[in-house]
Structure formats: C-alpha cells, structure tokens
Length: 137
Image (tube, rainbow, N blue to C red; front, side, top):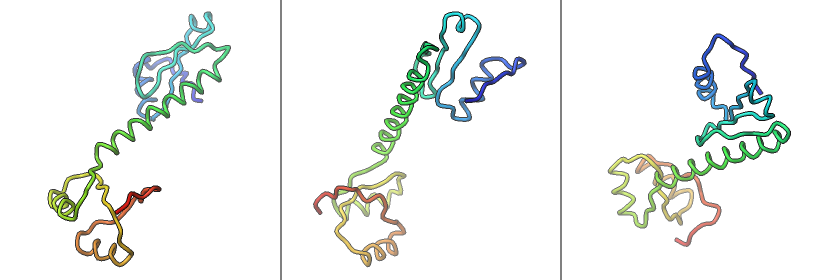
C-alpha cells in the first residue's frame, strides 16, 4: 500500500503516476467518502469506479484484484491467440517463414532432437512452448 500525501499535485497527475507504475487498483479516500464509510476504487484494467465499503474493504479489495488478474489473463490469452497461426503442412510452414510475419506458429511436430537442430540450421527458428497435451501428428 502506498499513500500519496502530496497536496501540491493534482489528482489526475497522481492517478497517472500510479497507472504508469502498473498499480492494479487505486483507492481514493476523501472527507465525504470517509463520512460515508466508503472508498472509491478504480481498476488499472478499466471499467467504472466502484464503491468499496470500508467495513468490508479486505474482501472487496481482494475481489477487485482477482478481477484485475482475470482481465489481464484474458487480454494475454486473446493476444496469444491472435498472434498464433495454426500450420498444417511443411509448405504452409515454409510460406509463413518467407512472409516473416510476427507471432507464433502452432505446428505438428513428430521429430527428434536431430530434426530440431536441422530445422534450426535451415530456418533459424527454435521450437518452444510445447503443449502439455500433444495433438496427433
């Protein structure tokens, strides 16, 4: 927890400072909020501000942080999926290499270490991210 006591800095500048640092959840506490027994929470991943009851703050903050984690995982999964091309043949593989597009290729692999070394010599690529559940080749 970091409390920003600076009074000479506007709220927007404070918000931007912590957003740049990657703080997942920002809580705002003003005099009126304290009177009402709430804090205003804002997720780094977007969405509207939410009221967090101070009497239940630990559980509500945990729930918000779980939501941030789910949002980040969903974004990451979507990006990986968007940048992954499924390849079904050597011809398709070679054509994709020739295009030099960014991203990953999901390629059936039935080779051994020698085949992998030869592939690296021929193309300059390396095999990575072996799936836990292999599809039949």
